Amino acid sequence: MARTQRERNEQTRQALLESGGSLLREVGYARTSVAQITQRASRAHGTFYLHFENKRDLVSVLLDDMAHEARQHAREIWRTTPTFEAIWLGLRDFLARITPERSLWLLLEEVVALEEDAAPLRSRLRHLYVEPVLRGLTERRDELVPPSSNLELLAEVLTSMGLYFARTGTLPASPDVTALHMTVVWCNAVGQPITETDLANLRDMFEAD
Image 1 (cartoon, one colour):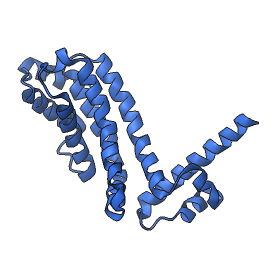
Image 2 (spheres, rainbow, N blue to C red):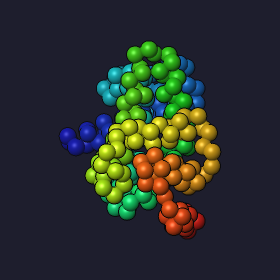
Image 3 (cartoon, helix red, strand yellow):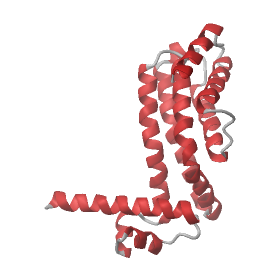
Image 4 (spheres, helix red, strand yellow):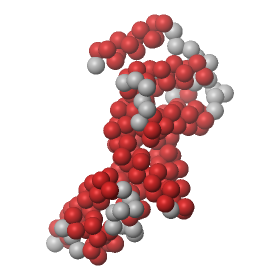
């Protein structure tokens, strides 16, 4: 019986997330109410507050869910892929995953604009993306960057570039090509320029895809 109740609770939570996510994307944060979310989810109004504190809490969960899968995949790439190829593959995956979710980034900007105390949401989401990059660099420092490099700054720079493209919808080329350019910039910045052979190998990788 307890397990059945947990399953029902999770089903309700997922229904609220799906309904809330679709409504917020359709009409925006200011024009979406809790009543509309529960009505679309076919749930009682009070059930919303069993799972979320308010609309902003629901938005936070949507953003966390978006970041979770990308983080998991990024960790796998950093762990298994050799040298600078990990940078390119990680960036390509990051750009490919987050760019289609531009509506969520725009939603986040609306929340921050409407509620002054919501700014930490942006910083928290940023950290969710920085953390796996920083961990990968820290674990493989000798292969990827000189010992003297500021890894935290490097991870922040890479993440900032990707988030800017996602937020503005201004990806200058395909995720493959954009990630290649970002990888070249990265390696030059840390004093390990990519050779022509390295570039040829990377091009072969994304042309093979």
